[in-house]
Image 1 (cartoon, helix red, strand yellow):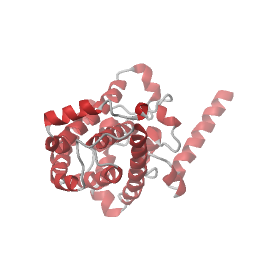
Image 2 (tube, helix red, strand yellow):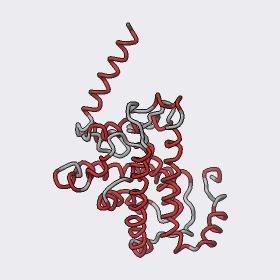
Image 3 (cartoon, one colour):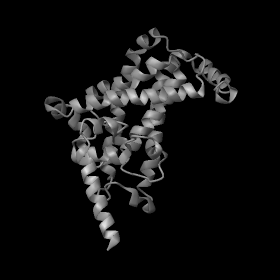
Image 4 (spheres, one colour):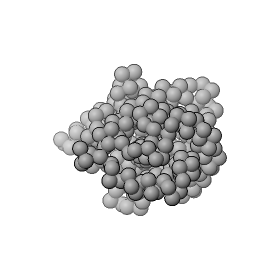
Length: 270
């Protein structure tokens, strides 16, 4: 069905590819897209800090995002992007082309694009859960993952604030899905933008009741992940809640949530 097709975008996409060149877009274009998606996702949550009427949605209301802390985080994230992620994209370029990724491939149908995004989220979440859980043990936590936990009250920019080795290891989980289900750069960029917004929102420190992701079954969201940063344990998944529930690593989160909800209900009834 034409209504479920992206054919109407193809002429503009192919013109864009022809103008900048496929080789440039696959490597450097992907890096630029990453920066636009990442910082573009951060800005709305950053602006929330200056809107008093939104502070009631802040998960840890007693913690403020100081300028010095944020600037330090932005600088270190930029260094990681430039000196870790960009070289990764450059050195993996031959492998990416070898598997047939193309910027000029026909665009997928909307249903298949949605199917690909769902599969990518499920695969990345499964990979992230086990690797993240392993990073909380011994040497891995002390020398690598502890850096990410410099911020017990996270804000959007902290999503990719991490040790270079952690950036590489967790980055693998991000690319598995699109390499299995697609061979076109357009889908890779859509997945990249979606995933980056999700991880920035998860670290935003805000939990908005109108967030449409609350309608998605087993979606964790910012409140779920914020607990992990506040307590340093449990809630290891990146996106969903079912793995933590199955393996009992979110028990403390739900126990505290239940206690707080009971106190809130008791206060209202008085």
